[in-house]
Length: 347
Ligand code: 2P0
Image: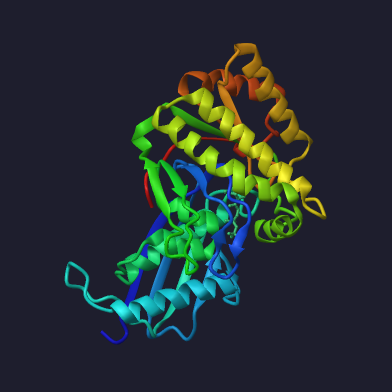
């Protein structure tokens, strides 16, 4: 029993926001300045798989990400593990099936792998921290809102805990206990909604989201208007568009919110530029396509990087792929230029 090793492996999907999270009111607790809403993607295409082992034989905590050992000195990682150990000590009982969780004072080995480019604006930290929080909750049999734990690793991670359409309510309390993710609709609600990701670049981004947000909150006058006036209204309209499966409204709001997110980045000082010329050409192509059809049939959205995420209904997808491959032919030998997915299940 003393030398027993407990091991749990879980996977978590990526989520792509349609109403963007950008800016914190509390850096320590990772509390946002506005609510956000996202679509969780299909785990077949974009996911993190994490294994955590706990044993008295381990000399210290260690972590490997994509087969490379990383430092444990990351403050968010340390805080998440400390919180899990505190809860384990507090709750420390049996699980429903009578098995005892590992002790809070053993060291752990964490091994995490993404099947997509890390830190290139493809929400790798979201899937990574959601997966770690969920795996730890399983391993230690914790009774806790997993999204609350995941949020403390990386804000957007709280939304990857659920499948389908998920909102992160910014909350009001100072301790962050009401800053949690809530499912708006399950993946089965809108199966016709599909996603195409155009990997414009898989290089690591120049300005990390965490640092970019700090600059925006400190320096952008537009940001204040965005979080006080624009986002609260958009959250309601977007939720309604999803519930009613109203694609033109969903698409219009998605593009408007992506545009405003990049506008507040440009409004920051020094300015933050995540889009490149290819991203802008994708925006122009989608705009021209929608204009031709006199309604929104495709939506683009861009996170903290140049990669484009396109949403459309299934009936539009084959035409969209023909269009995209015509104007943006894939790089020879790189079949991962395009990633097609649909909405996904929970962790
Ligand atoms: C989002 N992004 O809503 C927005 C859109 C990027 C652009 O959430 O500092 O990696 O770890 O909380 O979660 C990226 O921010 O930042 C992000 P931290 P995170 O998906």
